[in-house]
Length: 441
Image 1 (spheres, rainbow, N blue to C red):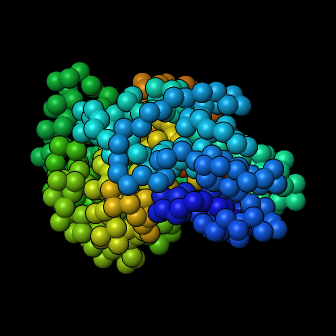
Image 2 (cartoon, helix red, strand yellow):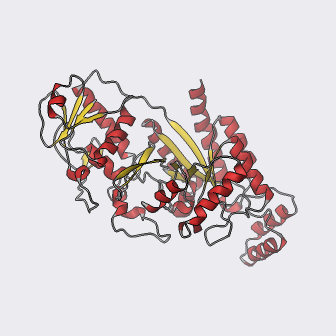
């Protein structure tokens, strides 16, 4: 596939590379030589301000990919094949798919002045996707399907990649144990606090755990291992390893041997990543320290991460991750609402919009997190299951990567999360298992 443009730009090269990886086995070539383009015998895309002939696929370009600054864009959405599109133009597609996809993938709007939520994060309710009601859709993937169909009408001989659907289960271990290894003083104070609040069952559970009569309510690790073995899946575990406790960093002490043993075990069994502490967002030296500590304990190079509380600020967060050697990040999603933050269910390379440069950092977007359903959206386990299955079906349809986030405390036996463990087991045994079975079959 050859693409003609009147002038090259880093933005255009980046999005053409992304679309080429998604659709074809070989990359799309770019040329600014009009004569070379006209003589090309194979499929060709004219991405410029004027068309040459009916034998080409023509998309009249929007100026976004040829700008060198970040400015507020005039965006008007319209309906196209029962979903939204913007940057309307003319040609074989009624909109500039390159510019629109670039806008969404780079999170362009997050570089502009914007309101923040109570945690200092980009507020999902101010996103274009939320305002235009497509947060629940991987819109870029839908557009790629439109592009494939349109290209086939012009070039019936074209062959496209057929990516396989992937279900990637991931866990954030914010606090491995609720009561164990906390010490007599801390646990005694906890029992008293529960009793004063009228939480008698909680106090009783803590007391039984202390006396080793009951498993810690957050310790669902063996149960999860059994599920993974049964379903033949290999999940990712992200560990919070802050050395000092803070308002948002309440992980178990990094000096406790059972906590170290847990990390070592999962690093041997599955892929283990860093869950950078909230404090590391303020004291940047902590990020390197936490990563190095995790590498020593796991005896593995740590190259993947996900931000604690999804504390993601562009471009600063990703630049810091790159600096310490993170290669893949799993933070692209909202910490207050489920959906597709970058409107995509495929992995992609991050583009630093301020530096106008593609980077080597791979972004793996998630669309469902149990904590969003429980704490933010106030869903029951049944309603959360329906939401989970809706997202799962959407991503499977588009052969994307379905990434969900789960927390051991929510999947444990704490009475405050009654029903969630059963909901997850249903999802694993009735959906994940059968898809894994069919893949292996």
